[in-house]
Amino acid sequence: MEKEFKIRCSQIGKIMSNAKVKGELSQTCKSYLHEYYANDNEQIHSKYMDKGNAVECDLIDFMAEQLGYGMAEKCMESASNEFIQGSCDVITHDAIIDVKASWNKKTLHQQVIDGLDKEYELQLQGYMHLYNRTKAVLFFGLMNTPETNYSEEIVYEDMPSNERWIAYNIDYNPEIIKAIEDKVIQCRAYLADYDLLIKNKLGKIN
Image (cartoon, rainbow, N blue to C red; front, side, top):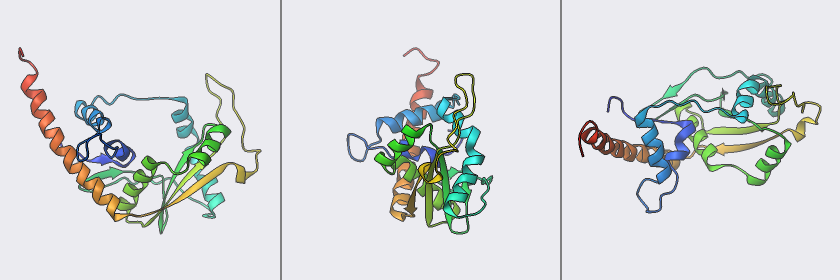
């Protein structure tokens, strides 16, 4: 392969999913690695992602106000090491903050019921490791939904502020980082074998 595999923080959950047989890669992980190998770079769009992108700056401002940071800016600095890479939303002197835009009141309330998602926790563990922080905050906020081709603007800013967000504290866990690094090494071995298989079969009568 032309480049050595590194996992993006936002995708750590895919390679860390549980396999049916202990010690092996899960089917979810293998499917992700096949996509990575093919390098198709297909753009995935949804109304949820579109809203998240559209309101990100306003959401960061809302988070900073609610958590007492005063002001906060989007982090424009990406980071990487031997195993992982990524770019967090906000970095402070002692913490990483990642913001997620809830689609509507129902999805925010469901987040309250579901609690901290394991994939998001893994994502922030990666960020903390890259940016050398020991604390992280995962912040879900309900912002106005902008007018689009498929819906009118939906306003939530007239709700009490405390009814528009929920956040989770996450502490850095070096054991999780070690597990991620071990999994990346395992993924590299799988990709090397997959690379040989593909190259030995393509362009030939099998």
